[in-house]
Length: 439
Image (tube, rainbow, N blue to C red; front, side):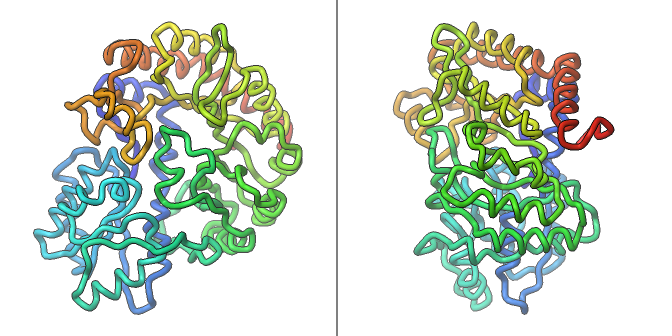
């Protein structure tokens, strides 16, 4: 189940009218599901597989057609992965398949957080990482003894990661491919749904990364790759080994990382030369009033320090997408307006703005539940990063929705988008020359 999901009609309509926002949504929605393709790479050779993708949003006819296409292959087992915002569609698909006699196994972050709920909708669930149990799942399915729940006994060694089955995508060219070089994040912010649910933070060895890069470029030379990492340079791995592998592959790539790479010469000195064109940096919150601080928890720092780090990254020839989260307990309408005015002048090549979202399995959701602040009429379909699913501390739900729409419209207006495009062009000109206008 791929693609962006937005529940609120006004926000959905706004996103469709803003070109810079729509372009980023389209890029993310086009990324193939790395998790399922990786599991396909672990399957024994005698298993035959097909891969199916759904980007529909609450469309019963589309789901029914998808179920018919899958059932027509007469599978022994159907594996479904979905994020929280699309889990209801995933459950509906599972039901359609089971009524057609197909056994269904489900996994992923949401299922890991809510295994009892998911177990009511399918034949088996995988809790946590699937690589360590996948062969057993397939053996049990083939032997007619599928268990209701599987959980790996220990964290999966990323050095043993299989090559994803990109061939299952067929002959259609993909604008981007995904590659994971690390799993999780050592910071474990309370709103993050990925940092700990699949086990401790780990990094993939450089030689394994090089093998996956070779596999991708054999299919599509000069590919554009988006790393499926939560925080690429947060660990203890020598960044030079990773950057050298990326450079040898000749790919262009994008990743998510901490702003503190702007204070690390060992990363900045080779980042652009390795083919990295953009990084999404989790600035998260920007208190531009009296305190002038940025970030949550362990990543909190004076605003001036964060700004210098971001400028250092772009001086190195890598465009920065600043990622901001609004709606925290410190936010009110005035602070959100101040953030908008700051972003109009900020030296960022692009921005990504989301609403604080209480994903299942996070300390944030647990706290809001204890405080009685989760909205009972807004279920999993509201966990989109763009919809409000809780009662804010310092404003009403409606005022946060209005302030968020105002902020998105302000920051993604044509003039603001053109200004950031000019910044990107200037940043990339440092590495490609003036003739290069896009990357």
